[in-house]
Image (spheres, rainbow, N blue to C red):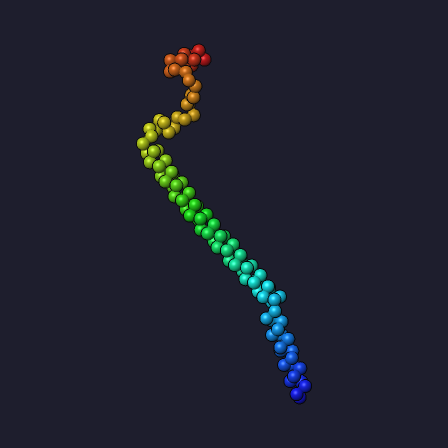
Amino acid sequence: MARKNFRSLRGLLRLQGFIRGDNVKKQTVNAMKQMHLFVRIQNQIRLRRIKMSENQAAQWQTSKNYKDGESTLSKWSLPSEAGNNENWDGSRLTKDEVDEKRQKN
């Protein structure tokens, strides 16, 4: 019985020596560094997602304001301007020159 207790005590001392050894300390330090790096990366991802969300909200607000401005502008445009875009002549000719050109055709 005493030998068995002595053997288990000796095994326990070896285990304690191993745990207090340099290899375990190195592994623990390495694990802590990796965890710190992982937390830092997670924080960067979270901040990037927040920033993207804010940018999307700002773009949505800007596009909404732009659409509101267009609808306000369309209230003030003349009906003839709204419907006659297909007859628009983008040339640099004067009105008289355009009329002469139409009369020739």
